[in-house]
Length: 583
Ligand code: ADP
Ligand code: MG
Image 1 (cartoon, rainbow, N blue to C red):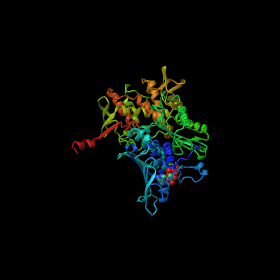
Image 2 (cartoon, rainbow, N blue to C red; image 1 turned 90 degrees about the vertical axis):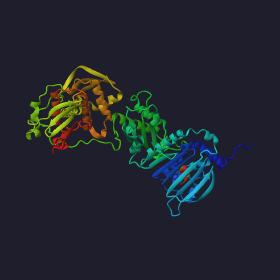
Image 3 (cartoon, protein in one colour; image 1 turned 60 degrees about the vertical axis):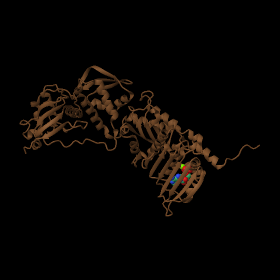
Image 4 (cartoon, protein in one colour; image 1 turned 180 degrees about the horizontal axis):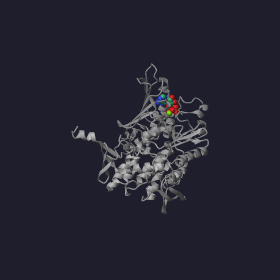
Protein backbone atom coordinates (compact mmCIF):
# COMPACT_ATOMS: atom_id res chain seq x y z
CA UNK A 1 0.00 0.00 0.00
CA UNK A 2 1.33 3.43 -0.87
CA UNK A 3 1.74 5.67 2.11
CA UNK A 4 3.30 8.79 0.67
CA UNK A 5 1.13 11.45 -0.91
CA UNK A 6 1.71 15.03 -1.94
CA UNK A 7 -0.05 17.53 0.30
CA UNK A 8 -2.43 19.95 -1.28
CA UNK A 9 -1.26 23.52 -1.40
CA UNK A 10 -3.41 24.91 1.36
CA UNK A 11 -2.17 22.29 3.83
CA UNK A 12 1.40 22.91 2.71
CA UNK A 13 0.94 26.64 3.26
CA UNK A 14 -0.44 26.13 6.72
CA UNK A 15 2.50 23.97 7.64
CA UNK A 16 4.84 26.61 6.29
CA UNK A 17 2.90 29.21 8.26
CA UNK A 18 3.49 27.18 11.39
CA UNK A 19 7.19 27.57 10.84
CA UNK A 20 7.33 31.18 9.75
CA UNK A 21 4.35 32.74 11.49
CA UNK A 22 4.51 32.00 15.18
CA UNK A 23 2.72 35.08 16.45
CA UNK A 24 1.65 38.60 15.48
CA UNK A 25 5.23 39.80 15.76
CA UNK A 26 6.23 37.39 12.99
CA UNK A 27 3.54 38.91 10.75
CA UNK A 28 4.93 42.35 11.49
CA UNK A 29 8.43 41.14 10.80
CA UNK A 30 7.55 39.66 7.41
CA UNK A 31 5.48 42.63 6.29
CA UNK A 32 8.09 45.12 7.41
CA UNK A 33 10.76 43.16 5.61
CA UNK A 34 8.68 43.23 2.45
CA UNK A 35 8.32 46.99 2.81
CA UNK A 36 12.07 47.31 3.27
CA UNK A 37 12.66 45.12 0.24
CA UNK A 38 10.31 47.39 -1.69
CA UNK A 39 12.55 50.36 -0.94
CA UNK A 40 10.17 52.17 1.40
CA UNK A 41 11.31 55.35 3.12
CA UNK A 42 8.47 55.33 5.67
CA UNK A 43 6.94 52.30 7.29
CA UNK A 44 3.90 52.64 9.48
CA UNK A 45 2.60 49.78 11.60
CA UNK A 46 -0.82 49.76 13.25
CA UNK A 47 -2.04 46.98 15.51
CA UNK A 48 -5.10 46.12 17.51
CA UNK A 49 -5.44 43.47 20.17
CA UNK A 50 -1.69 42.92 20.32
CA UNK A 51 -1.74 42.25 16.58
CA UNK A 52 -3.96 39.17 16.79
CA UNK A 53 -7.03 41.18 15.82
CA UNK A 54 -5.36 43.33 13.25
CA UNK A 55 -1.93 44.17 11.88
CA UNK A 56 -1.61 46.80 9.24
CA UNK A 57 1.64 47.78 7.58
CA UNK A 58 1.77 50.78 5.28
CA UNK A 59 4.76 51.56 3.13
CA UNK A 60 5.72 53.99 0.40
CA UNK A 61 7.86 51.51 -1.50
CA UNK A 62 7.71 50.49 -5.14
CA UNK A 63 4.24 48.90 -4.90
CA UNK A 64 3.02 46.22 -7.26
CA UNK A 65 1.25 45.97 -10.55
CA UNK A 66 -2.21 44.31 -10.44
CA UNK A 67 -0.69 41.11 -11.88
CA UNK A 68 2.05 40.98 -9.25
CA UNK A 69 -0.43 41.75 -6.49
CA UNK A 70 -2.34 38.62 -7.46
CA UNK A 71 0.78 36.50 -7.75
CA UNK A 72 2.29 37.68 -4.49
CA UNK A 73 0.18 35.20 -2.48
CA UNK A 74 1.18 32.14 -4.48
CA UNK A 75 3.60 29.89 -2.68
CA UNK A 76 7.14 30.41 -3.96
CA UNK A 77 6.03 33.56 -5.70
CA UNK A 78 8.85 36.04 -5.39
CA UNK A 79 10.27 38.85 -7.43
CA UNK A 80 13.60 38.48 -5.74
CA UNK A 81 15.24 35.43 -7.31
CA UNK A 82 14.80 33.63 -10.57
CA UNK A 83 17.28 30.80 -10.50
CA UNK A 84 19.40 28.90 -8.05
CA UNK A 85 22.49 30.93 -8.92
CA UNK A 86 20.80 34.06 -7.56
CA UNK A 87 20.65 32.53 -4.08
CA UNK A 88 24.28 33.28 -3.36
CA UNK A 89 23.87 37.02 -3.95
CA UNK A 90 20.48 37.67 -2.37
CA UNK A 91 20.42 41.07 -0.71
CA UNK A 92 16.75 41.30 0.15
CA UNK A 93 15.13 39.99 3.32
CA UNK A 94 12.65 37.77 1.56
CA UNK A 95 13.27 35.59 -1.44
CA UNK A 96 11.45 32.35 -0.72
CA UNK A 97 8.10 33.75 -1.72
CA UNK A 98 6.58 32.14 1.34
CA UNK A 99 5.60 34.85 3.76
CA UNK A 100 2.48 36.28 2.16
CA UNK A 101 1.23 32.81 1.23
CA UNK A 102 1.79 31.62 4.79
CA UNK A 103 0.17 34.63 6.42
CA UNK A 104 -2.81 34.52 4.06
CA UNK A 105 -3.38 30.84 4.81
CA UNK A 106 -4.08 31.56 8.49
CA UNK A 107 -5.81 34.96 8.43
CA UNK A 108 -7.85 37.49 6.48
CA UNK A 109 -5.60 39.60 4.32
CA UNK A 110 -6.32 42.70 2.33
CA UNK A 111 -3.49 43.99 0.22
CA UNK A 112 -3.87 47.34 -1.49
CA UNK A 113 -1.04 48.56 -3.62
CA UNK A 114 -0.08 51.06 -6.24
CA UNK A 115 3.05 51.24 -8.33
CA UNK A 116 2.59 54.88 -9.21
CA UNK A 117 1.46 54.11 -12.75
CA UNK A 118 -1.53 55.89 -14.21
CA UNK A 119 -3.77 52.84 -13.75
CA UNK A 120 -4.30 53.68 -10.06
CA UNK A 121 -4.10 50.99 -7.40
CA UNK A 122 -5.26 47.42 -6.93
CA UNK A 123 -6.74 45.49 -4.05
CA UNK A 124 -6.69 41.78 -3.34
CA UNK A 125 -8.66 40.21 -0.50
CA UNK A 126 -7.89 36.73 0.75
CA UNK A 127 -9.73 34.82 3.45
CA UNK A 128 -7.98 31.89 5.06
CA UNK A 129 -5.96 31.27 1.96
CA UNK A 130 -8.81 31.71 -0.54
CA UNK A 131 -8.99 34.73 -2.78
CA UNK A 132 -12.39 36.37 -2.32
CA UNK A 133 -11.97 39.61 -4.23
CA UNK A 134 -9.59 41.47 -6.50
CA UNK A 135 -10.11 44.77 -8.23
CA UNK A 136 -9.04 48.35 -8.70
CA UNK A 137 -8.73 50.53 -5.61
CA UNK A 138 -6.99 53.86 -5.19
CA UNK A 139 -3.59 53.72 -3.53
CA UNK A 140 -0.59 55.99 -3.84
CA UNK A 141 2.75 54.44 -4.74
CA UNK A 142 3.38 51.87 -2.04
CA UNK A 143 1.57 49.06 -0.35
CA UNK A 144 -0.80 48.57 2.57
CA UNK A 145 -1.23 45.07 3.90
CA UNK A 146 -3.88 44.44 6.51
CA UNK A 147 -3.93 41.12 8.33
CA UNK A 148 -6.99 40.39 10.45
CA UNK A 149 -8.05 37.50 12.66
CA UNK A 150 -4.68 35.84 12.82
CA UNK A 151 -4.90 32.05 13.21
CA UNK A 152 -8.67 32.18 12.60
CA UNK A 153 -8.45 28.64 11.23
CA UNK A 154 -5.65 27.46 13.50
CA UNK A 155 -7.19 27.32 16.99
CA UNK A 156 -4.19 25.47 18.42
CA UNK A 157 -1.91 28.35 17.40
CA UNK A 158 -4.37 30.89 18.63
CA UNK A 159 -4.33 29.30 22.05
CA UNK A 160 -0.61 29.86 22.26
CA UNK A 161 -0.90 33.58 21.87
CA UNK A 162 0.09 35.44 24.99
CA UNK A 163 -1.57 38.50 26.42
CA UNK A 164 -1.95 41.48 24.12
CA UNK A 165 0.70 43.39 26.02
CA UNK A 166 3.22 40.58 25.59
CA UNK A 167 2.52 40.53 21.88
CA UNK A 168 2.86 44.31 21.69
CA UNK A 169 6.21 44.05 23.44
CA UNK A 170 7.33 41.49 20.88
CA UNK A 171 6.25 43.76 18.07
CA UNK A 172 8.05 46.73 19.59
CA UNK A 173 11.12 44.55 19.85
CA UNK A 174 10.87 43.56 16.18
CA UNK A 175 10.40 47.11 15.02
CA UNK A 176 13.23 48.32 17.18
CA UNK A 177 15.54 45.86 15.55
CA UNK A 178 14.42 46.74 12.05
CA UNK A 179 14.59 50.46 12.78
CA UNK A 180 18.10 50.30 14.23
CA UNK A 181 19.30 48.58 11.12
CA UNK A 182 17.65 51.19 8.87
CA UNK A 183 18.26 54.60 10.35
CA UNK A 184 17.30 56.46 7.18
CA UNK A 185 13.82 54.97 7.16
CA UNK A 186 11.04 56.45 9.28
CA UNK A 187 9.18 53.98 11.50
CA UNK A 188 6.05 54.38 13.53
CA UNK A 189 3.83 52.09 15.57
CA UNK A 190 0.28 52.68 16.77
CA UNK A 191 -1.42 50.22 19.06
CA UNK A 192 -5.15 50.57 19.60
CA UNK A 193 -4.93 54.02 18.04
CA UNK A 194 -2.22 55.18 20.43
CA UNK A 195 1.19 56.14 19.12
CA UNK A 196 3.85 53.95 20.70
CA UNK A 197 6.85 54.65 18.53
CA UNK A 198 7.73 57.39 16.11
CA UNK A 199 11.22 57.58 14.75
CA UNK A 200 11.86 60.09 12.00
CA UNK A 201 14.66 59.44 9.50
CA UNK A 202 18.08 59.59 11.23
CA UNK A 203 21.39 60.47 9.57
CA UNK A 204 23.28 57.42 10.88
CA UNK A 205 22.81 54.21 12.80
CA UNK A 206 24.12 55.79 15.97
CA UNK A 207 21.56 58.58 15.77
CA UNK A 208 18.76 56.10 15.33
CA UNK A 209 20.03 54.15 18.31
CA UNK A 210 19.93 57.35 20.31
CA UNK A 211 16.32 57.94 19.28
CA UNK A 212 15.56 54.47 20.46
CA UNK A 213 17.60 54.52 23.64
CA UNK A 214 16.93 58.00 24.83
CA UNK A 215 19.62 60.37 25.99
CA UNK A 216 20.58 58.76 29.28
CA UNK A 217 21.47 55.38 27.94
CA UNK A 218 23.12 56.91 24.88
CA UNK A 219 25.62 58.69 27.05
CA UNK A 220 26.99 55.42 28.37
CA UNK A 221 27.83 53.89 25.00
CA UNK A 222 31.20 53.55 23.27
CA UNK A 223 31.66 53.57 19.55
CA UNK A 224 32.84 50.31 18.04
CA UNK A 225 34.51 50.23 14.66
CA UNK A 226 36.90 47.79 13.06
CA UNK A 227 37.52 46.33 9.64
CA UNK A 228 39.34 43.15 8.69
CA UNK A 229 39.59 42.69 4.93
CA UNK A 230 36.10 42.82 3.46
CA UNK A 231 34.39 42.39 6.82
CA UNK A 232 33.50 45.40 8.95
CA UNK A 233 31.92 45.70 12.34
CA UNK A 234 30.63 48.96 13.75
CA UNK A 235 28.14 50.07 16.36
CA UNK A 236 27.89 50.83 20.04
CA UNK A 237 28.85 49.02 23.21
CA UNK A 238 28.19 50.01 26.80
CA UNK A 239 30.98 51.30 29.01
CA UNK A 240 32.07 48.78 31.58
CA UNK A 241 30.54 50.77 34.39
CA UNK A 242 27.05 50.37 32.99
CA UNK A 243 25.65 46.87 32.82
CA UNK A 244 22.45 44.90 32.74
CA UNK A 245 21.07 41.88 34.54
CA UNK A 246 20.47 39.98 31.29
CA UNK A 247 22.07 39.67 27.87
CA UNK A 248 18.88 40.88 26.21
CA UNK A 249 20.43 44.16 25.18
CA UNK A 250 22.89 42.52 22.83
CA UNK A 251 21.95 43.02 19.23
CA UNK A 252 23.67 41.87 16.11
CA UNK A 253 22.85 42.84 12.56
CA UNK A 254 24.42 41.01 9.69
CA UNK A 255 24.12 43.04 6.52
CA UNK A 256 21.31 44.96 8.22
CA UNK A 257 19.43 41.82 9.16
CA UNK A 258 18.89 41.22 12.88
CA UNK A 259 20.20 37.79 13.83
CA UNK A 260 21.38 35.85 16.86
CA UNK A 261 24.78 34.25 16.70
CA UNK A 262 26.36 32.23 19.48
CA UNK A 263 29.86 32.93 18.24
CA UNK A 264 29.38 36.68 18.34
CA UNK A 265 27.70 36.52 21.75
CA UNK A 266 30.71 34.58 22.96
CA UNK A 267 33.06 37.21 21.56
CA UNK A 268 31.11 39.87 23.46
CA UNK A 269 31.39 37.89 26.70
CA UNK A 270 35.12 37.49 26.18
CA UNK A 271 35.70 41.16 25.51
CA UNK A 272 33.97 42.13 28.75
CA UNK A 273 35.43 39.28 30.79
CA UNK A 274 36.78 40.60 34.06
CA UNK A 275 35.34 44.06 33.50
CA UNK A 276 31.83 43.48 34.76
CA UNK A 277 30.58 42.14 38.05
CA UNK A 278 29.63 38.48 37.74
CA UNK A 279 26.18 37.91 36.38
CA UNK A 280 26.03 41.31 34.69
CA UNK A 281 25.94 41.88 30.95
CA UNK A 282 26.90 44.68 28.59
CA UNK A 283 24.61 46.25 26.04
CA UNK A 284 25.91 46.04 22.48
CA UNK A 285 24.58 46.94 19.07
CA UNK A 286 26.84 45.53 16.42
CA UNK A 287 26.47 45.96 12.69
CA UNK A 288 28.40 43.43 10.70
CA UNK A 289 28.95 44.12 7.03
CA UNK A 290 30.12 41.02 5.26
CA UNK A 291 30.16 40.00 1.60
CA UNK A 292 27.16 37.76 0.82
CA UNK A 293 29.52 35.04 -0.33
CA UNK A 294 30.92 34.80 3.22
CA UNK A 295 27.62 34.24 4.97
CA UNK A 296 24.79 31.76 4.55
CA UNK A 297 21.52 33.33 5.59
CA UNK A 298 19.55 30.29 4.57
CA UNK A 299 20.02 28.07 7.59
CA UNK A 300 16.85 28.98 9.50
CA UNK A 301 13.31 29.26 8.12
CA UNK A 302 12.77 32.60 9.84
CA UNK A 303 16.32 33.63 8.94
CA UNK A 304 17.15 34.57 12.50
CA UNK A 305 20.41 32.70 12.35
CA UNK A 306 23.22 32.74 9.85
CA UNK A 307 26.28 30.66 9.15
CA UNK A 308 29.58 32.38 8.54
CA UNK A 309 32.12 31.00 6.11
CA UNK A 310 34.86 31.96 8.59
CA UNK A 311 33.21 32.00 12.02
CA UNK A 312 36.57 32.28 13.79
CA UNK A 313 37.48 35.41 11.87
CA UNK A 314 34.13 37.04 12.66
CA UNK A 315 34.49 36.10 16.33
CA UNK A 316 37.97 37.62 16.53
CA UNK A 317 36.96 40.73 14.65
CA UNK A 318 34.14 41.41 17.09
CA UNK A 319 36.27 40.68 20.11
CA UNK A 320 39.10 42.92 18.89
CA UNK A 321 36.72 45.70 18.01
CA UNK A 322 35.20 45.61 21.49
CA UNK A 323 38.59 45.33 23.18
CA UNK A 324 39.75 48.34 21.27
CA UNK A 325 36.72 50.32 22.31
CA UNK A 326 37.14 49.29 25.93
CA UNK A 327 40.91 49.28 26.28
CA UNK A 328 42.47 51.65 23.76
CA UNK A 329 39.94 54.22 24.76
CA UNK A 330 37.67 53.20 27.59
CA UNK A 331 35.47 56.07 26.61
CA UNK A 332 35.90 56.37 22.87
CA UNK A 333 33.09 58.06 21.08
CA UNK A 334 30.95 58.89 24.05
CA UNK A 335 27.84 60.34 22.57
CA UNK A 336 26.14 63.48 23.63
CA UNK A 337 22.40 63.39 23.36
CA UNK A 338 21.21 65.53 20.51
CA UNK A 339 20.22 69.01 21.48
CA UNK A 340 22.01 69.09 24.82
CA UNK A 341 22.27 72.52 26.28
CA UNK A 342 25.78 73.79 26.57
CA UNK A 343 26.55 76.63 28.91
CA UNK A 344 28.41 79.16 26.76
CA UNK A 345 30.20 81.52 29.06
CA UNK A 346 29.68 85.07 27.93
CA UNK A 347 32.57 87.47 27.46
CA UNK A 348 34.29 88.52 30.62
CA UNK A 349 33.00 91.79 31.99
CA UNK A 350 35.07 94.78 30.95
CA UNK A 351 36.49 95.32 34.39
CA UNK A 352 37.95 91.85 34.70
CA UNK A 353 41.73 91.89 34.80
CA UNK A 354 43.76 89.62 32.53
CA UNK A 355 46.32 87.58 34.42
CA UNK A 356 49.86 88.68 33.78
CA UNK A 357 51.48 85.64 32.17
CA UNK A 358 55.04 86.79 32.56
CA UNK A 359 55.30 87.52 36.25
CA UNK A 360 56.30 85.27 39.06
CA UNK A 361 54.19 82.29 39.79
CA UNK A 362 51.56 82.36 42.43
CA UNK A 363 51.93 79.86 45.23
CA UNK A 364 50.36 76.60 44.15
CA UNK A 365 47.02 75.69 45.57
CA UNK A 366 46.84 78.31 48.22
CA UNK A 367 44.26 76.90 50.57
CA UNK A 368 41.65 79.32 51.76
CA UNK A 369 43.09 79.26 55.22
CA UNK A 370 46.52 80.62 54.27
CA UNK A 371 47.62 84.11 55.10
CA UNK A 372 46.29 86.53 52.56
CA UNK A 373 48.75 88.84 50.87
CA UNK A 374 46.40 90.90 48.80
CA UNK A 375 48.64 93.92 48.84
CA UNK A 376 51.72 92.09 47.65
CA UNK A 377 49.92 90.57 44.71
CA UNK A 378 48.02 93.51 43.37
CA UNK A 379 50.69 94.63 40.89
CA UNK A 380 49.83 91.53 38.85
CA UNK A 381 46.45 92.84 37.90
CA UNK A 382 47.70 94.77 34.89
CA UNK A 383 44.52 96.02 33.28
CA UNK A 384 42.94 97.33 36.39
CA UNK A 385 46.08 98.85 37.69
CA UNK A 386 46.65 100.58 34.40
CA UNK A 387 43.14 101.94 34.62
CA UNK A 388 44.10 103.33 37.98
CA UNK A 389 41.27 101.44 39.53
CA UNK A 390 42.74 98.71 41.59
CA UNK A 391 44.21 100.65 44.44
CA UNK A 392 41.23 102.97 44.50
CA UNK A 393 38.37 100.53 44.13
CA UNK A 394 39.68 97.08 44.86
CA UNK A 395 37.41 94.12 44.85
CA UNK A 396 36.22 94.07 48.34
CA UNK A 397 34.47 91.13 49.88
CA UNK A 398 31.58 92.58 51.83
CA UNK A 399 29.89 89.56 53.26
CA UNK A 400 29.32 85.84 52.98
CA UNK A 401 25.79 84.70 52.35
CA UNK A 402 24.65 81.30 53.58
CA UNK A 403 28.30 80.27 53.90
CA UNK A 404 28.29 79.65 50.15
CA UNK A 405 28.32 82.98 48.34
CA UNK A 406 30.59 85.95 48.61
CA UNK A 407 29.08 89.36 48.08
CA UNK A 408 31.74 91.76 46.87
CA UNK A 409 32.02 95.26 45.50
CA UNK A 410 33.64 95.54 42.09
CA UNK A 411 34.74 98.66 40.25
CA UNK A 412 31.44 98.95 38.42
CA UNK A 413 28.96 97.38 40.77
CA UNK A 414 28.24 94.41 42.93
CA UNK A 415 29.23 90.81 42.31
CA UNK A 416 28.00 87.63 43.90
CA UNK A 417 30.60 84.91 43.79
CA UNK A 418 29.87 81.19 44.19
CA UNK A 419 32.77 80.36 46.47
CA UNK A 420 33.19 76.77 45.35
CA UNK A 421 32.91 77.47 41.62
CA UNK A 422 35.28 80.41 41.96
CA UNK A 423 37.91 78.52 43.90
CA UNK A 424 37.61 75.65 41.45
CA UNK A 425 38.35 78.05 38.59
CA UNK A 426 41.34 79.47 40.41
CA UNK A 427 42.90 76.11 41.26
CA UNK A 428 42.19 74.74 37.82
CA UNK A 429 43.87 77.62 36.00
CA UNK A 430 46.83 77.42 38.30
CA UNK A 431 47.24 73.66 37.94
CA UNK A 432 47.08 73.77 34.15
CA UNK A 433 49.44 76.73 33.90
CA UNK A 434 51.95 75.14 36.23
CA UNK A 435 51.78 71.78 34.54
CA UNK A 436 52.43 73.38 31.14
CA UNK A 437 55.52 74.97 32.63
CA UNK A 438 56.42 71.68 34.37
CA UNK A 439 56.46 73.37 37.75
CA UNK A 440 53.53 71.93 39.61
CA UNK A 441 54.41 71.99 43.25
CA UNK A 442 54.21 68.45 44.55
CA UNK A 443 54.21 66.94 47.94
CA UNK A 444 55.48 63.49 48.88
CA UNK A 445 52.98 61.64 50.99
CA UNK A 446 54.31 60.54 54.33
CA UNK A 447 52.49 57.27 53.88
CA UNK A 448 51.92 56.20 50.27
CA UNK A 449 48.28 55.47 49.61
CA UNK A 450 47.40 52.19 47.92
CA UNK A 451 44.02 51.59 46.45
CA UNK A 452 42.22 48.66 44.85
CA UNK A 453 40.53 49.58 41.60
CA UNK A 454 38.46 47.68 39.04
CA UNK A 455 40.20 46.54 35.86
CA UNK A 456 38.57 49.38 33.93
CA UNK A 457 40.35 51.87 36.13
CA UNK A 458 43.68 50.09 35.71
CA UNK A 459 43.26 50.49 31.97
CA UNK A 460 42.27 54.09 32.43
CA UNK A 461 45.36 54.65 34.56
CA UNK A 462 47.62 53.16 31.91
CA UNK A 463 46.23 55.62 29.40
CA UNK A 464 46.78 58.69 31.55
CA UNK A 465 49.76 57.92 33.75
CA UNK A 466 51.91 60.52 31.93
CA UNK A 467 49.23 63.15 32.10
CA UNK A 468 48.81 62.51 35.80
CA UNK A 469 52.56 62.76 36.34
CA UNK A 470 52.54 66.14 34.59
CA UNK A 471 49.82 67.31 36.94
CA UNK A 472 51.86 66.39 39.97
CA UNK A 473 50.76 62.88 40.78
CA UNK A 474 53.27 60.05 41.26
CA UNK A 475 51.15 56.94 40.84
CA UNK A 476 52.29 53.45 39.90
CA UNK A 477 50.75 50.08 39.30
CA UNK A 478 51.44 48.11 42.45
CA UNK A 479 49.62 44.88 41.65
CA UNK A 480 47.22 43.74 38.94
CA UNK A 481 44.45 45.90 40.34
CA UNK A 482 46.30 48.01 42.89
CA UNK A 483 47.58 51.54 42.45
CA UNK A 484 50.13 53.22 44.71
CA UNK A 485 50.09 56.99 45.12
CA UNK A 486 53.31 58.49 46.44
CA UNK A 487 53.09 62.14 45.46
CA UNK A 488 50.26 64.57 44.87
CA UNK A 489 50.12 68.20 43.78
CA UNK A 490 50.12 70.53 46.75
CA UNK A 491 46.58 71.58 46.11
CA UNK A 492 45.45 68.02 46.80
CA UNK A 493 46.98 67.98 50.26
CA UNK A 494 44.27 67.35 52.75
CA UNK A 495 42.00 65.67 50.23
CA UNK A 496 41.00 62.05 50.44
CA UNK A 497 43.69 60.90 48.02
CA UNK A 498 42.19 57.50 47.21
CA UNK A 499 38.87 59.06 46.42
CA UNK A 500 40.46 61.77 44.34
CA UNK A 501 42.41 59.27 42.26
CA UNK A 502 39.30 57.18 41.69
CA UNK A 503 37.46 60.25 40.53
CA UNK A 504 40.26 61.23 38.19
CA UNK A 505 40.14 57.78 36.62
CA UNK A 506 36.36 58.10 36.34
CA UNK A 507 37.05 61.21 34.30
CA UNK A 508 39.19 59.17 31.95
CA UNK A 509 36.34 56.73 31.48
CA UNK A 510 34.02 59.61 30.71
CA UNK A 511 36.39 61.26 28.29
CA UNK A 512 35.60 61.28 24.62
CA UNK A 513 38.75 60.43 22.71
CA UNK A 514 37.45 62.49 19.82
CA UNK A 515 38.03 65.51 22.04
CA UNK A 516 41.76 64.83 22.18
CA UNK A 517 44.38 64.65 24.91
CA UNK A 518 44.21 68.29 25.81
CA UNK A 519 40.57 67.82 26.71
CA UNK A 520 41.54 64.94 28.96
CA UNK A 521 44.18 67.05 30.74
CA UNK A 522 41.54 69.70 31.29
CA UNK A 523 39.07 67.19 32.61
CA UNK A 524 41.57 65.80 35.08
CA UNK A 525 42.66 69.25 36.19
CA UNK A 526 39.02 70.25 36.62
CA UNK A 527 38.30 67.20 38.70
CA UNK A 528 41.36 67.73 40.90
CA UNK A 529 40.42 71.39 41.32
CA UNK A 530 36.87 70.51 42.20
CA UNK A 531 38.12 68.12 44.82
CA UNK A 532 40.45 70.61 46.42
CA UNK A 533 38.24 73.68 46.18
CA UNK A 534 36.53 75.11 49.22
CA UNK A 535 33.01 73.72 49.54
CA UNK A 536 29.73 75.46 49.81
CA UNK A 537 28.37 75.70 53.36
CA UNK A 538 31.79 76.55 54.64
CA UNK A 539 32.40 79.68 56.63
CA UNK A 540 35.19 81.92 55.30
CA UNK A 541 37.15 84.65 57.03
CA UNK A 542 37.10 88.07 55.35
CA UNK A 543 40.70 87.65 54.12
CA UNK A 544 39.82 84.30 52.62
CA UNK A 545 36.90 85.81 50.79
CA UNK A 546 39.04 88.66 49.53
CA UNK A 547 41.64 86.25 48.36
CA UNK A 548 39.15 84.21 46.38
CA UNK A 549 37.57 87.25 44.77
CA UNK A 550 40.91 88.75 43.76
CA UNK A 551 42.36 85.49 42.47
CA UNK A 552 39.18 84.87 40.53
CA UNK A 553 39.40 88.22 38.80
CA UNK A 554 42.89 87.37 37.65
CA UNK A 555 41.67 84.25 35.85
CA UNK A 556 41.20 84.18 32.11
CA UNK A 557 37.57 83.20 32.38
CA UNK A 558 36.45 84.27 35.79
CA UNK A 559 32.77 83.98 34.98
CA UNK A 560 32.54 80.20 34.95
CA UNK A 561 33.95 77.23 36.78
CA UNK A 562 35.93 74.71 34.68
CA UNK A 563 32.75 72.68 34.18
CA UNK A 564 30.96 75.66 32.74
CA UNK A 565 28.82 76.56 35.72
CA UNK A 566 28.65 80.28 36.45
CA UNK A 567 31.05 81.38 39.18
CA UNK A 568 29.87 84.95 39.51
CA UNK A 569 26.86 87.11 38.92
CA UNK A 570 27.07 90.86 38.61
CA UNK A 571 24.79 93.73 39.30
CA UNK A 572 26.31 96.80 37.60
CA UNK A 573 25.94 100.02 39.51
CA UNK A 574 24.02 101.78 36.73
CA UNK A 575 21.50 98.97 36.68
CA UNK A 576 21.22 99.11 40.45
CA UNK A 577 20.57 102.84 40.25
CA UNK A 578 18.00 102.37 37.53
CA UNK A 579 16.23 99.72 39.55
CA UNK A 580 16.02 102.07 42.48
CA UNK A 581 14.80 104.91 40.29
CA UNK A 582 17.86 107.06 40.88
CA UNK A 583 18.55 107.41 37.17
P1 ADP B 1 9.52 37.11 -0.53
O1 ADP B 1 9.62 38.37 0.26
O2 ADP B 1 10.28 35.99 0.06
O3 ADP B 1 9.79 37.32 -1.99
P2 ADP B 1 6.75 37.28 0.15
O4 ADP B 1 5.69 36.25 0.22
O5 ADP B 1 7.08 37.99 1.39
O6 ADP B 1 8.03 36.60 -0.45
O7 ADP B 1 6.36 38.33 -0.95
C1 ADP B 1 6.13 37.87 -2.28
C2 ADP B 1 6.40 38.95 -3.28
O8 ADP B 1 5.42 39.98 -3.16
C3 ADP B 1 7.72 39.68 -3.08
O9 ADP B 1 8.78 39.00 -3.74
C4 ADP B 1 7.44 41.04 -3.71
O10 ADP B 1 7.64 41.00 -5.09
C5 ADP B 1 5.96 41.23 -3.47
N1 ADP B 1 5.71 42.09 -2.29
C6 ADP B 1 5.35 41.68 -1.05
N2 ADP B 1 5.18 42.73 -0.23
C7 ADP B 1 5.46 43.84 -0.95
C8 ADP B 1 5.48 45.25 -0.66
N3 ADP B 1 5.19 45.74 0.57
N4 ADP B 1 5.81 46.11 -1.66
C9 ADP B 1 6.11 45.64 -2.90
N5 ADP B 1 6.12 44.32 -3.22
C10 ADP B 1 5.80 43.43 -2.27
MG1 MG C 1 8.99 38.65 2.16
